[in-house]
Image (cartoon, rainbow, N blue to C red):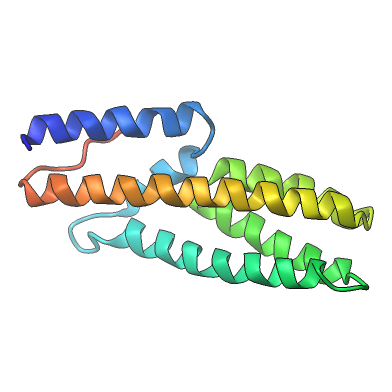
Length: 151
């Protein structure tokens, strides 16, 4: 596919991620840290986020399935998830974590379970979108082009 076409597809794909609140400016700042000396920086950081998130989701599911829920443990996992999602700019994931922590404070198991489902949905949405974004980036670089910046 023609380079200019790929770059236009990239911008067309990226713009709604910000307008819909899936990503925020923190993701743009991450991109700005990437350079020739570390061309895989964003991919590496986001891949670590994916790995950590999958572990946290599994741990949250296990913890909330207990007869007696350790809400302090749930809150610690959600707090960690909130921090890591904020660090890569996954805004909607971070927002669900903020609501989730309120249910932890109230020791509301049903509220926590509802938030866990929302968290999984938002996480898998951002994961899918970022994986698609990275594939587009690889195609652009393979075609000899540079990744267009949003701003």
